[in-house]
Image (cartoon, rainbow, N blue to C red; front, side, top):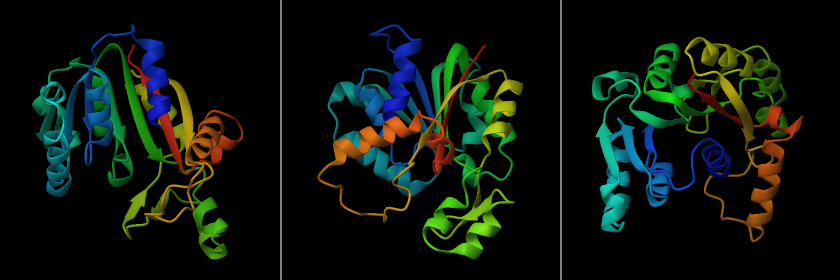
Length: 233
């Protein structure tokens, strides 16, 4: 997903331009820190105290120049309008958040309002068109059958959450003025890997295979996650 995001940034903005980036639901700050290291001005929004503490600890270990380029805001992603003016950012990230939001439309509209004209919106969501794959590959046939007619599922943390279908999100992005520019699959081959499993010796080859599958039909359509990139008109 990071490679996909970098590809979109490189294709949309001038080389060397310092971008204003908003990461909504930044978690422990992995992507926010990566982009700050690349020279961008990054604001991360997160409401979970444990995640905020982890992000601040990671940021504290960075050189001063990187620390100055990253700001952490404690808050809910649905309240971006409280903290920022419309059009304040060139890139807005919302990765792994929509599955926890029962009604995502207000959040999506708020994210689009944060974008400057020509700005990039990067969403990572659970693929509602491929929910049957994980239980099916684990031999849970009843679970696989039940997954065809719903966008609700139970994640690995044991939480009841929701997925998004590509066609539905495409229509929503068009409706909020940030129409879909391109999309990728994420975790095409590796969704069944155990959490916490050590990286394989051939990690680079694995990533190359995932990256290729994530941009190639029909593989990307059955990925566990979708990475959608919209552009503000």
